[in-house]
Each structure stands twice: as C-alpha cells, then as structure tokens.
Image 1: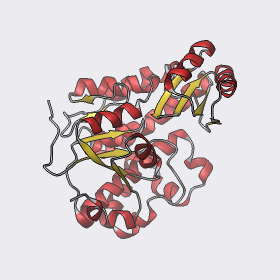
Image 2: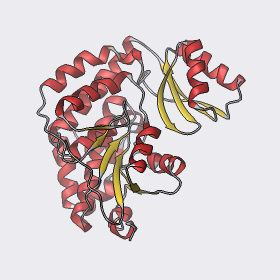
Image 3: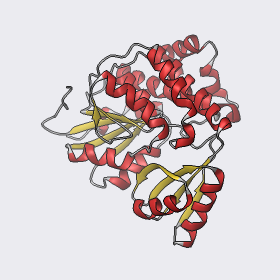
Length: 317
C-alpha cells in the first residue's frame, strides 16, 4: 500500500479538473513557452491521430465542447501544465492526488499508473462511449443550489433522478432522464432551492443511464497497461484512496454510473492533514469548491503560464 507523504510543515494535494473546464485558447501560452508542455501536445496529437492541440488553441468552441473532444483536451492541457511547472520551477511531491470525474485520469498519469499516450487514448474512448450512451439512453443534468444532500436525495427518490455530484455544501448535481430531472428541478424550486441550473451536457453522466458505456470501457481498460500508484489517489466513488491496480480499474468503471463524491474527497484529505490544494489544469472550478468546503485550507489554481511560474512562491512556509 502507498502511504501518504507527510511534510513536517504542510501536506499538499494536487487536484485535476473535469469536463466543463475547457475553453478555446487553453494551453496556448504553455505550448509557446515550455518545451515540455509542447512535447505533451505533440504527443497527444500523435496518439490521437488528429491535432487536439489546434482544437485547444483555436476551437471552434462547439467542437471542443463535445464530450469526445473535451475530455482528451482537458487531460492534455492539465498534463502540459504539470510538465511546464516541473520544467520551470519544479513541483513538490503531494501527499494525495484526486480528480473530478475525467480529472481522475489525469491523477492516474501523475501517479504513474498510466503513461500519457495510453491515458489520452483511453479518455477519448471514454468520451466517445459516454456520448454514445447519451444518444442511446437520453438524459440531462442540473445543479441544485441551496439544498443539502439529504433534501436533494429525497427529491431524487420521488422523481427517479440520481445524485451525480456532491460538489460542496449547498451544491449538488442531479442526473437522469429528462423527465425525471425536470420533475426534480420543479420540486427543488418548490422546496426553496436558491437556484436550479440545467447543465449543457450530452447525457446523464454519473447515473444508471451511462450503463451502456461500461462494457466498452471495461474492454478498453483491459487493453491498457496499469501500474501501482506512486501516490495515493482519492477515488470519486468512495472518497477514500485506491492503492492497487484492481481497485483503480474498478473505480474507473464505477465512476461512470456512480456519484462523484467531491466534497467528501476533499474532507478526507483535509482530515488526513492536507492544508494546501493545487488545482492543475484549465479553469478554477475545483479551486472555488475547495474554498467553500475547507475554508482554512489554501486552494490555488495552476492553469496558465503566470501561475505556473509562481507555484513554488505560493507554497506555505
């Protein structure tokens, strides 16, 4: 079993963003300024057989937003950011790594479970299978703001929707058939939700409607070489570390149809001693969530060249 690395001063964790963090132009400054980041983009283009780098830098946005493209694009930019940081100023060893849904694959690359080329191909297949499952069993998702998990779960039981993400206190995402999600949204409003936000997604992710993707994903996973992690990985579906290859493979299948337990994952790491989180990759979604979950912890985003250059200066101590 891999044990956490405990610093006498402070424990840190690296966290990696999921789908929805993409934007046109992401990673371009890294590509232009870091030879190691450039190698990552070139490697992704070669592994996928098309220029994912150009899609990241130039769009168009509607193509980048598609699940089959957004997932490998975000993984590529996150790893490019990590490699650029290592080149420019080094990176301290984290005690834990974790990723939100898709971001779990980025965590696996950092922890040396998967090599990058294998991971980017696997993530593209994941995106394809999820997009296909969304067409076979159509559904939708919505964020419920201002109700606690128990209240949202009671509404889901009444409507047939499922909790897909526990992001932070007062922010729970639901998933299911369009009819179930619509009924859930109506009930949430009637019970005093501060906000109900439909999400622009191609399917009911992290619900039973993703079941058609599981067999294909299991086949894809069986063709890839996995290694034991060098750093504990806090899993989405359990909010506890996975430390063996078999646990990791099962987690990658489980997270397709099960809830992403992000708030409990962050709380696990904080309770284990983590006081500083670095979100590595595009966007600031996880940074904002962590600041709401653990107000005493430091949460910083490393996603563009300016933040890459200053990472070590942001460390405590």
